[in-house]
Amino acid sequence: MDSVVTIIWIVSFVLVTVTVTGLSRKVGWSAPISLVAVGAIVSFVPGVPQVHLEPDLVLYGLLPPLLFAAAIRTSIIDVRARGDSILALSVGLVLFTVVTVGFFTWLIVPAITLATGFAFAAVVAPTDAVAVTAIAGRLRLPRRLVTIIEGESLFNDATALVALSASITAIVGVLNPWAVAGDFALAVIVGIAVGVAVGFGVSAIRSQLKAPVLDTCLSLVTPFVAFIPAQLLHGSGVLAVVTAGLIVGQKAPVVQSAEARIAESLNWRTIRFMLENSVFLFIGLNLYSITTAAASSGIGVWQTVGISLAMLGFLLLARFVWVLLSTLRFTLVPTRFRDRGWSWKNTFAVGFSGIRGVVTLAAVFLLPEETPQRPFLQFLAFAVVVGTLLEGLALPWIIRRLKLPPPNSAQERTEAQMLMAEARDAGISWLDAEASDFDSEAVLRRLRADAALYDDELENPKPVGDESSPAAFGRLRLSMIIAERQAVLSARAAGRYQENAVRAVLAAIDAEEIALRVIGRKIEIDE
Image (cartoon, rainbow, N blue to C red; front, side, top):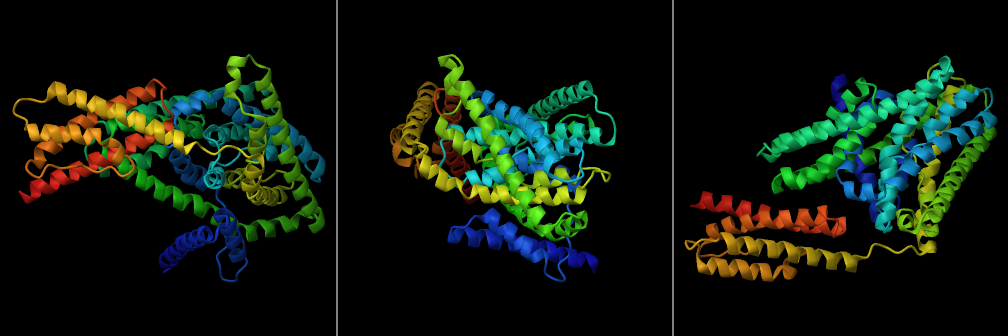
């Protein structure tokens, strides 16, 4: 009977998540804030089970698939192009936050040690990939800015968790700076090495799989295959998952069939939606237990409110100071390197993008039992998460005030059309070189006409069959598609087009290939 009750609660959890998210989007509210609010209210309802956050469940169960879902959608080329900006935020900003916010926490929270202040600062230092994607995804920010913000949230967890581990060591024992540096180096090297091995290994296996179902099953376990071994080897599981995801996503057009790519995309979109939104509901459901524990700290209500507001303000200030320093640094470098940074307008957008999420709540529960004011720090971490989510609501107003240019849709559409033209030319070249005398001239003419009319089919691609010889048309068109895809990948490798244009064309080619294969199977059955 207990199992039935558990299943009922899980189903109710999913239904509430989907319903609140759907209604929030319909009325134009922020889904993350709505879910946190609903969860917080429900947590105080009599009869609702108390939710206790299990750090290992979050770190090993939720974090890997969330990071992987974001990483496979991120371009290695874009990350490499903005690498120094991402590094400045994911490493430099985290360490700056640990030091400055650590001292500030030590000053304002009663009866804690400096090591405890640094530990709490490490907890609240990283932005959350889920929260950032949920907020930034609704805004039409410049592509470069989105890459930097999302790249920061993907990589900064590793730095923060190493800093947290060092701070915990200082709480329970004696801190050795050289050991900390060694641990950080080990975490980075092992994490990246495991991620590279898993990424290339999974891609090699995928190249041999023919069934999209098997391919999707492999994809679903990949984040755990990367995360767990990296953690066991004292590396960064976060870096392993992100690295593997970047490699798997980059190699997908080469090693996967079109059907497998479409299936994987739809499955991960569903997983991302469910996990991202359920995380916010889960955060809200923790309010009752966190508040109850914090009440025993001896710190008064108004003092708690004051400390929470002061912490939110100082976190925002620390982020702005570092981003401003980074902006200034990019203005002082030689001219050829300045395009790697961000403009002064972008500085404010980046400064207000420091949104925290479930990783912060999971990390604060990793603090050992002997940590001074541990229950109060758990509540303070919750206040930071909710406060930064509310801060994210100001982003649309800030973007409008800054008048940041949205993505240039016309340029991206033009680039997509130009790239599609190159792909069609590659297909025609293959047809001219490989078509035999046994191929119907009517089919060949129809194939060339189809290639010439690509622009009419760019947004809604569909195969054009020849009723007299559909099998021949499908066979030749599929071979042309292989050549077209290779031309697109070659253009991407050369960096001649933006990634959005590349992905749009690859999606159009994939859609046509799937349609042709489905039609081919249908014809075989009918015949």
